[in-house]
Length: 451
View 1 (tube, rainbow, N blue to C red):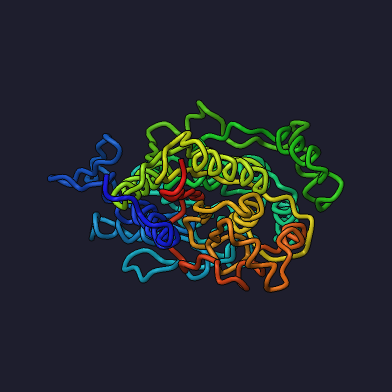
View 2: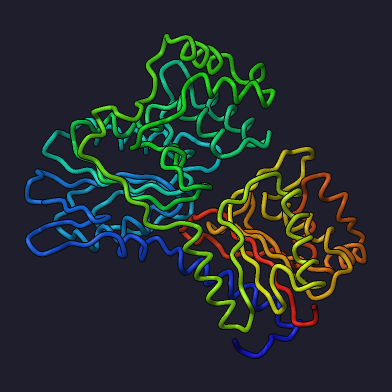
């Protein structure tokens, strides 16, 4: 291990470790690692061979924040063997492509452009036959970008339901169980539209556990959730009587067996198709740990499956940081303790921020007065909530610095206004659109002055 890094370098080191994680999650390189064109026009993906000469056409469809660079890699690999397609990406996340049309739309609340782009995808799939191969490119954000409400539900009703779910603290698994039952594209909907074409899906995972039917709401894979699950989730969060009436009627009818369910495991429409996860949070954390070790830190990856209320998770991380500094457990300083996942925020105020900024602010409060410990929280997609920041960084001096500027950190946390607090302190992390998305990265750096 290299010499111990000085305490003054903690912030710079934390940002370097973060950028190592982002580089490892590069979706273009991830696709190239898992997809290759072999001699004789054979496409290898995830250990499986696809004889391209047997197909009339090869088409690409998809959606998500990271889908444009995934599509660029696909174009480079297939060249003239790719016959076209359409993807929908978040505003600002597009790239110029040669054969695949790129449509930008709103996220996380869907808009009319998402409806139009998804309509183009569904039209493309409707024209497919058994002699076609569809390559679906799915990454985080696809749930909002693939917008095709079922008959009887309008865009505004879908938008309001999404807003309510975002504000109540529902997990991504819960949100997607609801959204899949309001959509013609999600929950196996794209696979159903493409049948009998073969479908190869390449996935960049942004959900805890890499559950295929949750990533992007699983548009090309079997759906394990049911209408009854969607109803139970809305009731559990106190939203059943608040969602639009048309949504409530549709879900109630589905739970009663009066609407067709999403396609389930064992459905023959998935026969002959395959799904490959090309990138995940754990891969990003592994690269971050290597970078930390090169900088002189002992490193430990706690988990890539962190969930829970952001401010509660932050207090747990702060406790780990204090323990590490005081006793050398679970790691002797200088130490870099890493984790990833996706927390939730139950909105109580009308401030600005996101789950990572809220987590960093709660961490700043819990670490107040503790020297030599730094806490960083950031979204790998470069955006945290409806802001231009990926997250924020905090240490034992953050809360005090805020008070000297007349900013009481607990008041900002109560208002869910972490963005304003960290913006005033200059402690926001702004990466711009990274065009990747493998959940969030959390890291604790503990300087050499501890145990």
